[in-house]
Image (cartoon, rainbow, N blue to C red; front, side, top):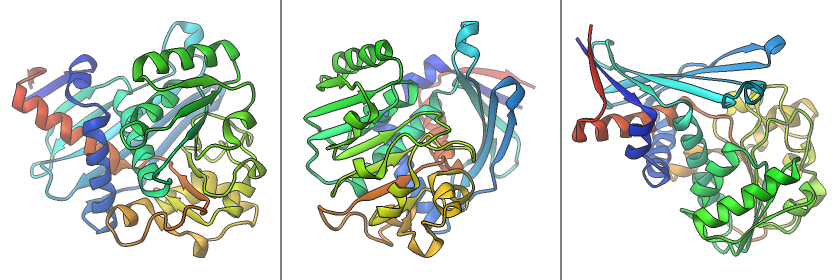
Length: 328
């Protein structure tokens, strides 16, 4: 039996936001239509070592493979000269269940598919005309979110806040040079959020950063950092005041996401959920219908996203005969 081994450099050459966004949008739509198999997630956290591990699997019906993704990270890694996050994706033949490929992407596909989901949410829920984007966070995911967002919206300026002013300045300079967009560092989170048409939060915060009073009429908020029950970026009032709240997956968000905290605080309930993201992607429910609506997308990360981007990589790698084959 042959197993294809693909490494980060090849994977980056095979897929970027342009390819990932339509694949992720289609995966969410198929999930809403019942055309996906999605088991529960596994969270294996080691708090004493500040290590987080997430295991997610999925199969998009009709696809030749199902996938299992393992993504880990340690916030102490930078002091060791290592990146915070890493990961790999295993692809198995859907007919035989045998391992077909291992994608040693070092977490790139997780970052990519998360950015793609943010772009899909913004495309469906943000106003068409966007003057200003506020980003809270200046790390790897803040980069992925902006790169993907620029595929679907063209803001006049981007304001980014990071706790470390030097990192925020470096982020602004790098993003402006890379994407040709006007990117400015913010001195405070409020400065980044207040007056922004789109707000993106991409931090590992355990205490709310974004306050409800900062979010004005017509704003769209995409929250991607809260992928564990102890994490929180939004004050529960943001969820409480929103006209439309969208979950990538309700049963995850009620356990892990910003919705989880709002439900616990008694300011939100299941009947107030406007839709799951896939329902809007599939045309089963509407996205934004008014320029004055406040919309929030709570994105905790769903296994169908990993399956979608892995499928793109596997198909492209087979066409171009990239990677190494291992006989076992």
